[in-house]
Length: 47
Image 1: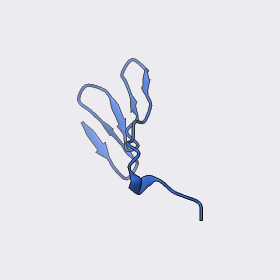
Image 2: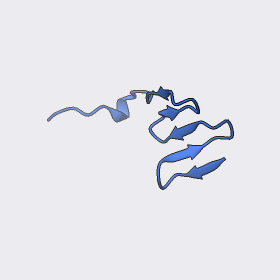
Image 3: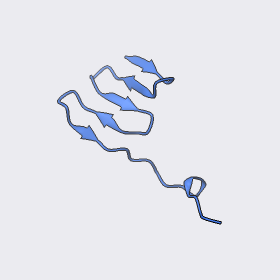
Image 4: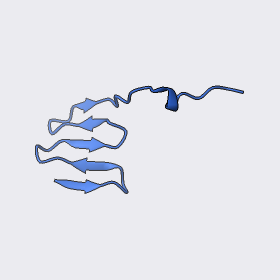
């Protein structure tokens, strides 16, 4: 396992690259899109 928070990613022991935005890159090349929860603290409104 390798953890590089300054670069925004971690390599898990099963070969999955996990990104800080919650996206993942699987060993077979498949991509899992980011799945961030949309809480009220992340919602921006125009003034």
